[in-house]
Length: 200
Ligand SMILES: [Zn+2]
Image (cartoon, rainbow, N blue to C red; front, side):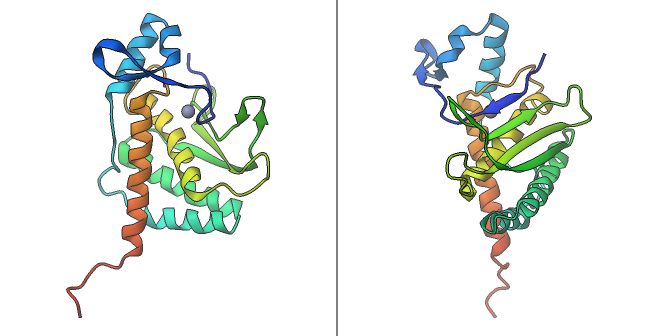
C-alpha cells in the first residue's frame, strides 16, 4: 500500500545519529517495522542525483520564477508541468500531473507545502504545490517553491525510478531533493547566459 504524502518541511523530525554507522536517521526510524527499516536504509543510501542527460529545463525554470513573481498561477503551473514532463522523460519514469493551487491549507501542525498522490486509483500520479502561504497569503519565495516541487518529484522517483515500495523522508531523500533543486537553478543560470563565441 502506498499512501498520499502530505509534506510539511521541518515538522517535528529531529535527526539523530545512529550509533555504529555514523549516519543520521530521523527519530521515527525506530518506530518502523523491520521491512520499513530496510526500505528506509535503502533510501538513505541513494545520495545526490543530477539532471538526466539532454534535459534542458533552464528556460522553464526562469519562466516559473517570472510567473511566480507576477503571481500568475496558470503560468506557474504550466512551467512546473513542462519541467516535470522533461524530467520524467529524462529519467524514463511514468509522467505525473502538477497542480498549482493558491493558498496553502494549514492545521495545528503547520502549513502544507506540497502533496504527492501516487498513481494508485488514478491514471497518473499527481503533485500539488501551493503558491501562497496560509497565514498572510503571500506568494511563496521562488527557491522554496522550486524546492517543494522537487521534493514531491523525489517521492515519485523513489517509487518509479528506485522502485522503493515506500518513500520516506531520509537524509538521502533530502540530498536528492537539494541536489536536483540546485541542478535546476544552475540550468536556469546557464540558460540565461548566452554561449560565448570566443569574444567578438
Ligand atoms: Zn515529502
